[in-house]
Image (cartoon, rainbow, N blue to C red; front, side):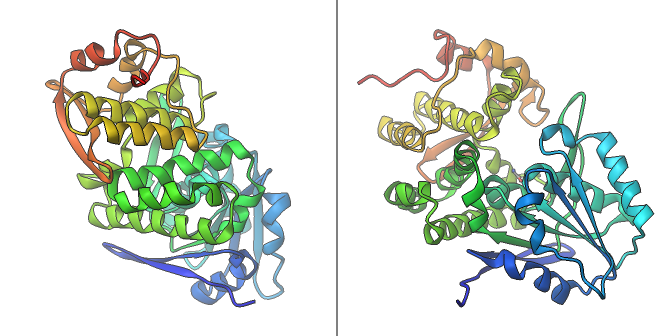
Length: 368
Ligand code: GLY
């Protein structure tokens, strides 16, 4: 069967690469990497969840030295220890500037391998093969790579663009429901910040996406990647507009941290987006109809709209983000309309406390 590939070109200073999106393209993934990169060695890094499912697409090659590294699945893997172990494992195997690393897995593997690729021999090519919805629509695109420190997530990292991104949406079929829904939160984010028509399309086709219909998934992932690329190309180093991609994330990161990461990233961002929407409504930036549509869609997507933490509990975590806090108040990404986000600075903390402070949980439901 002829595969339908969506291709997106990413152009950032000094880098030009392609994102290939398909339903079934994983089968020809190795062939594509070899054809486009002509590596002298290939190092595939994956995790214990993904290896049994998809490592089979990277069979040993008679003409090419290949090495596989399998790391434990989970956020704890993005550690200094693992970073060192992987670098030394690769150096032991042998590596040159003509070698290529492949990140086969979700965001944890992608972030870690990207960071290894950014430092080893002062920079190697690496191919992102994201196998979770979250990684397909967000972390595999745009070159943010990082590991965690005891002082926080993603605090040690680099901007290092991949040389190719290969997305096969059929890998979403093996995701647990919670992980799939988690990725959907980021798809919804693109609609809310950038494209009211995409929001309407998501509303109409939510069921097909939830059923993981390959055609609808491919379309949703394609549009999401186009959005992400637009912001990355305009502002690779997040000096201005790329910050809009953090819609819902300032509240979301506080919720993730307060829950000790038992509330997942997507769920936390969904609650954060509802809070940002509610705050936008309270400032008169959007009408009640817009806020109501967002809450309704988040609920239909089986994502949470509220959590048990108070704004007083959240503020210390929000203040940790240097980009969010300044002497004259907070900077938040808010909405001006469905599909139009805006950066709002100099927001006094008291305005958040005044709005959210009276209830024990965020966000407050709208009146019926
Ligand atoms: N995840 C947001 C960004 O890549 O900028």
